[in-house]
Image (cartoon, rainbow, N blue to C red; front, side, top):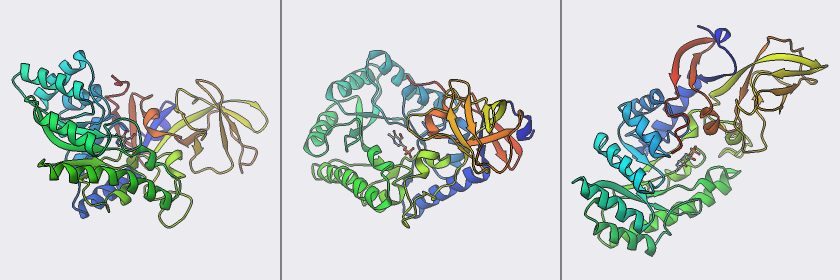
Amino acid sequence: MTKDDLHTPALIVDLEAFESNLTKMASHVRERGLGFRPHAKTHKCPEIARAQIAAGAQGICTAKLSEAEVFAEHGIRGLLITTAVIGKRKIERALRLAAAAPDTIFVVDHEENARELSEAALAEKTRLDVALDLYVGNRTGITPGQPAVELAQKIARMPGLTFQGLQAYAGHASHTVTFAKRREVSQEAMGKAVETRCLLEKAGFEVHLLSGGSTGTYNIDTEIDGITELQPGSFIFMDVDYARIGSQDGSEKYTDFASALTVLTTVVSRPEPRKAIVDAGLKAFSTDKPWAPEAKNVTGLKYFFAGDEHGRIDFSEAERELKVGDRLEFVIPHCDPSVNLYDRLYAVRGDKVEAVWTIAARGRSQ
Ligand SMILES: Cc1ncc(COP(=O)(O)O)c(C=O)c1O
């Protein structure tokens, strides 16, 4: 099968770029003696998780319990669920997951939730591994420092839980534009996590885990002493949003990782001069930012969203006409939520479709 055989819109991963991104991140982390637990919220795909583990990852992160369930069913181990599992029903599922994949780590940031997890584990005569989720300026978590130490001390007294360490995700740092500013924001955020680790060690805790980092801060966070592993996600695919954060050498474009993910579209109508309509709109590209999809390998095209199923292409500055039936490939504005729109991912080398990967955890947002 070649790309020409694919029905559009189709989600495409360029294997050469994907493999080079994976090798680059895995070796960067390995050479600095750190662990690697990439975030699978980006791809939701067991084949990619297996490729990441083959490249040296000790497991994967998932954002949600339901994603973790899918990966566990596919035999993936070393799961870290990066958001807390809240409520009785979900805790029951967490226990079932831990029975199937006993090295799964759950995060907690609240005493009551930790107690519920502990009681549920005790009732099953088991223990759950937990890490404290630290609020380092982004979204969730317990306040670093003394509040975190106090929660860890309470967890240590809960017989159904085993304290493993810390998670700190500085999502506000990852897309900070310019490397210098990004370094400042990440060092400040992750510094709080490292300080908390030191306080915990002084209080007698063994902190096996301090997991954090992202595609935008990977080479900043590996220079911070005390972080044990990185959990970047987008680096395997990249997107329009990440390409604009700026590189360490001062250039505007972030070129550390190659653009590997595109949507292949077809021109389906030519309603006006120098305008064409493609078969990919809001249901083909998720967008939470002002950036539009960007044409790959063609200059002078501008994409505008034209509804759920369509995109309008202005090609008045392009060197050639567009005809009905032409194929156009676009780089995605934001990779994670766009992948979640597709059942499968076509893995291509050049024009040849080498594999079709199922996005098995697609839609698993519970
Ligand atoms: C908790 C957590 N860790 C890591 C990541 C990976 O970040 P990135 O895709 O920027 O590498 C995310 C992404 O949203 C996340 O939510």
